[in-house]
Image (tube, rainbow, N blue to C red):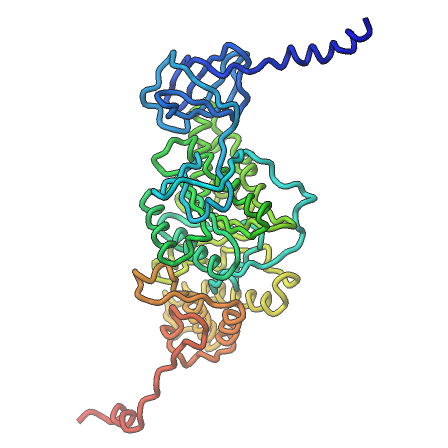
Length: 491
């Protein structure tokens, strides 16, 4: 009797762990929302299901409605799907390819190559649903991540292993700034760049691929795209796929990774669409009630560990330039640096159009960047803020009505604004000006010399779109005879 009692728990476990039924039947189709009935044990949440001819329609389980029915979101278009059709469970979640074989390739959310290149080799497949690194594994050291872009390195220093946001409305230069950073990072760091396009136009993906190929940085780069015309479920998961690839290079290869996401707002937007399709009650301004949780699930995986770091720069579209929008507010809370792009500066041709007074970085403290850098950045902000206050007076009364001290402040601010512009490698074909990277030392040196009035005799235009300050050219003084002729009264 005793041996039977001892074996009873094991028998009960075996009885309860029945092998799940691998097939089910569609009971309803409402756009991208599909309800499927399984006769046996229903598949867990996040399991991938296949339906349609050649299993071309992919569905992800999002909810278990009862003991036999699940509700899924289609990750592919659902044309041709009907009630009564058979559905097959894969038994696992969505997976992404990882390994050295993915470098220089372009992928969709399913890990299929979309660059018409050779078949993938030397890769393994990992689930896109992964936990963030534990607190004990994270690095507590704060390091600066130099970009070679003057305005960012001086005023909004980025953190290695941190998250920076590029905030701005449509057409102010977010994508251009991201592509320039890819060019600079791959050229100066022995790292990997991963570009994740969430809800991007196919034109942008094609242009980026060709630009990176011409710049010679493709061998250390991976591109993942969930295009604008794809279903919301696909756009919602493409960020997880890119992060899984980034985690491989950080944890297995011990390399630094630059993860560029364009655009994180499209991730929130896709989540909002999925939430609406699932029938959830919307929250403020129509956003999904789970927005904070979904965004945290993605952002917390971006971290700096003892083996390597994932540094992320994310473009954030701000609806109607309203920074109180819930999407912008929730994204702000995750960032170590916020780079705000200004439409006014862009209209004046001051590129990159970074608003120094609205942008901020948690790294800009004396303990991290040093006393000289900190004091210089504060003085630049102070000068630009004073100029901002004086703009109304100048517009109404003219520059001549200002005191001599205020005129000096205006001259310094205008020269600083022009010096902080920079020609980009990615815009050479449009501007005709050769791109330049500038070291932090040269950037700080240039700003310091402008604040000391070394360039007060130089025209403002001589500081526009240059690299280091030594490239500024002072106009040649007129010859003595020419000067006399100019002063002589007309005959």
